[in-house]
Image 1 (cartoon, rainbow, N blue to C red):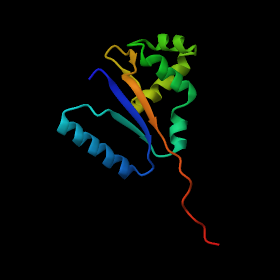
Image 2 (image 1 turned 180 degrees about the horizontal axis):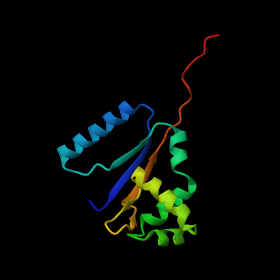
Image 3 (image 1 turned 30 degrees about the vertical axis):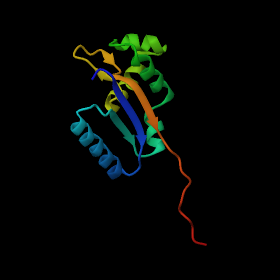
Image 4 (image 1 turned 135 degrees about the vertical axis):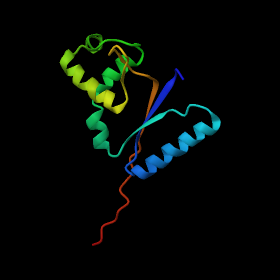
Length: 127
């Protein structure tokens, strides 16, 4: 499984998101094929609050870099090591980056897909 894939989804109903993940896992067990991984956000605000432009640049820089140090990651994105460290901490918490045994950083995903859909509000207000 060296070609890990991540889908970032926006699903406000956590039960639906959990059910979908369970179905995907069951299908993977049945077919014995890797189904990819999913990171779900409940709101657009949660998504954009966590995945800022600078954090995306960091993920992109590390996506094909292999395993590198924090200092090298900061150099590649042209930013201060302290600020990159803060962003790395958040990205590790989200699962977009990982640390190896020596503390070096890696983005394990060959492909990252963002699945979002914005629909008009279907609620009608009584007059």
